[in-house]
Length: 323
Ligand code: PMP
Image 1 (cartoon, helix red, strand yellow):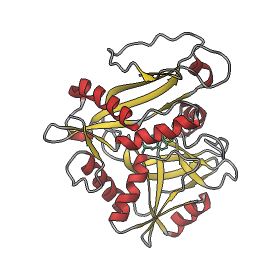
Image 2 (cartoon, rainbow, N blue to C red):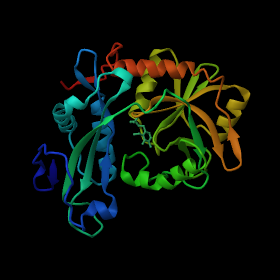
Image 3 (spheres, rainbow, N blue to C red):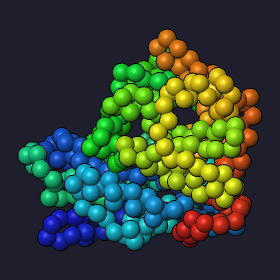
Image 4 (tube, rainbow, N blue to C red):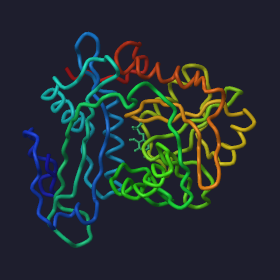
């Protein structure tokens, strides 16, 4: 789908997958004016195909687009584009065996051929899809974390809440550091005080306290995960209180040491919900929280996965039938 100021959104079409031809002066290649989304299509036991809260992805893309000075694609057009592509690629949506699904990547790029620094006057929205296996090969295991003390992901007034390539470009070197230190994912702290936990390279975080409270870092500079928001609803429906607040790295360390924090988990579209293992940094380490039973983590994971694959009641009306 194309956009210009004169015509608005126009020329929606489905074309065979293949390379794009872009002029070397295309704006997005130089100034990273782009936004994207990540979502999945799930096949239910009866063969029907569904997406999970696609309007939430559309609304997040709209917020990201405003931040990136890109035009807003209406929610219904976003959902219609995703549905149209899934219908073409439907044979690639595996059955629910092993939690396989079709990964969908909607994205919007500045396609004007112009080297001046100003919002592009030509924008293109596209959707591609790819079959995705389970995030965990050989069963769920806790993700090990590396705390970066040198790099931050986003600051106040920045674009941390937007799903845009630049945020991931800035996180690559920190993720590289995590991998070099034998860890799966990097943990980012706030950029001002380097004290408060923000999120992982590609997931949001949750802390479960022994007294039944659950806390997750507040929004502002983090990516507002759709899994994160859904877990708040599921946890509340299970009778838990969820605090969205600042949570310091000291609270993490002391809470795990004293036993006050009994589970920590991470969440996102790809991994759904996963236990967090040990946290390491240059010169220190905090072990996995609790006894490793991950009781609530597993309960929340099952509740979410059962809704997505149609095995549990869709009590919140989150599922959208594609075909
Ligand atoms: N934070 C970051 C930085 C991410 O890339 C993702 C994955 N999109 C998330 C959090 C989780 O978001 P969601 O639940 O919408 O997948």
